[in-house]
Image 1 (cartoon, rainbow, N blue to C red):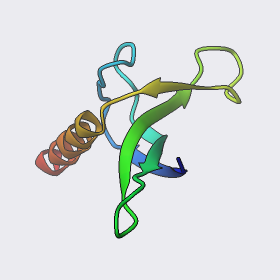
Image 2: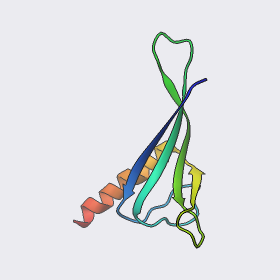
Image 3: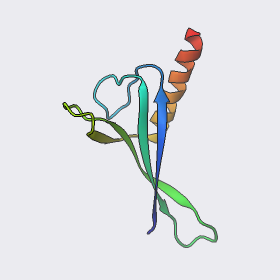
Image 4: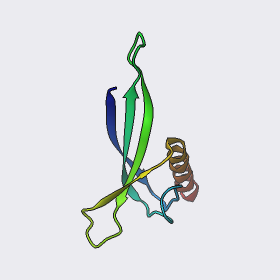
Length: 91
């Protein structure tokens, strides 16, 4: 099976919570890594999502380390929408 990996950056302007991450996360930019697996046997190329990882700075003295957490893409989308709504309401 062929795996396609995509890295994107998401921005939060407010602190937020995601299931699977400990505590409230600070506002900022975060990397999201998605793995999609190619579905064989179809007449066209198609993929299905097999993993979504959310990367945060590791809780250590060095900011060069990162931690990856498996998250729900639906929950991430909801958190981003909530963040945008909170930002609009404040302005």
